Structures are given as C-alpha cells and as structure tokens.
Image (cartoon, rainbow, N blue to C red; front, side):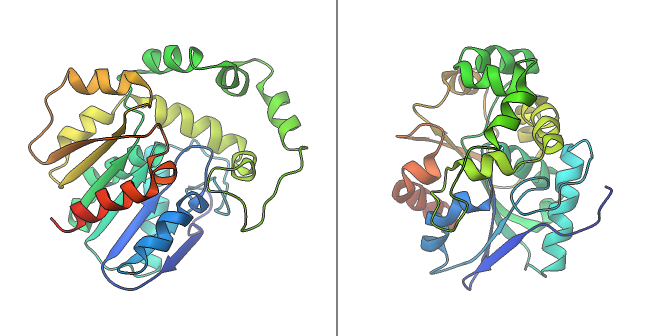
Length: 256
C-alpha cells in the first residue's frame, strides 16, 4: 500500500467493542442512527473504508488485502480491544467476512447485513444491468467518467445534517477506490467460499425486498452450522430503513 496511514474513525460509547464497516459509495456516516442506539451499551467504532469518505485515497488496486490491511492497522493504532463484534453492510459485509477468515482470533461474532451474494462476475453484471439505467450509466457506460465529473458539480449538503444515504458520500469516493473495489470486492463472487472458511459465529441478514438473486443463491446452498440466517422486512438498507428492527437483531445475537 502506498500510504501507510490509518483510516478515518469515530469511537463512541463504552463497553464491549463493535466495529462497523460501510458499503459501496458510502461512508461511516451511514451508521449514524444505529450508532446512536448501540453506543448506549457498547463501544462503537466506525471506519471510512480505504478510498471512501474521509479516509486516505491512494492510487492502488483496492483489493481485499488492501482494505483488510488498512482496517487492521487502524484497529491496532486505536488499541481496540479484541475480540470484538464485526458488523458489515453490503460491500462492507464482504470485507468483514474476509477479515474474519484472516483474523478469526480477533472476532467474537460476525454480522453481515445485505451482502451482495453473487456467485461470479457474470451474474453480478447481468443483475446490475437489469436493475436500472443508473448502474449502467455510472458503472458500465463508456461515458461513465463524464457522468461522475458532472455529478461532482451538483451542489450537495456535506454537513453533519445530511441523511445516512446521501449524495455527498457517493461523489466523495475516488475513482480508483470506486472501480477497484467494485471489480475486486463486489465482483469477486467469493462470499460463499469465504463463508465456508470461517468458524466465527455468523449472522446473515437478507432484505426480503433486496435483489432476489441473493435469496436464490442462498437456497441452493447448505449453510455451515456456525451461520444463522434471518430475513428482514426491508430492501438493501436494513440498517437505515428499518433501524429499530436491525438494532433488535444485532442485540439479540450480541447476547448469544
């Protein structure tokens, strides 16, 4: 990694530590409503992933190894007590799962919300291209750099009052982080192979109204005995759109 700097982090509350990893085109601000609940009983650590939010944005490939090295370095720097609970949303769930396979002794439990559970890159591309013109324009079009440049010219609210899902975080992502993370993390199709590699107690939460391909891929596989699967009455943003239910799920499995 070019720049051996720590990630942007916030640490709130006291108690057993919970580390939160956000998803694609997002930042740790995504977790604000959830943090306000969890910090009452736990130490809650949120990170801006490498290349996202306020974290360093080196010109690198943004592989699993790049992200995990940066996360590990940051947690060591802040002397976060281990083992901790690791919670990831969307792309952050993929990174959290890989982290658990590499550092199982650091994690007491793993919670994966709305993970993009594709089996290979072709399935992902087919799904995204059928999802709407925004994915085709921003991620696949030959003119995508022009679209991103135009988006950055649009005024947006970058203050603390911005909502958890917001335009400011989307345009703040560097091109290298955006394209590298999309190619090397989301398109890897390694969710199920990683799931078989970890013995950490794992909760998977799937949104009932998220992409149906995730449920179909789960139904075709038997899950390891250390994995619990829950269905949420939500789409892709369980931790924001149904935060009360999400908190209940998190706390229920924190107690186990």
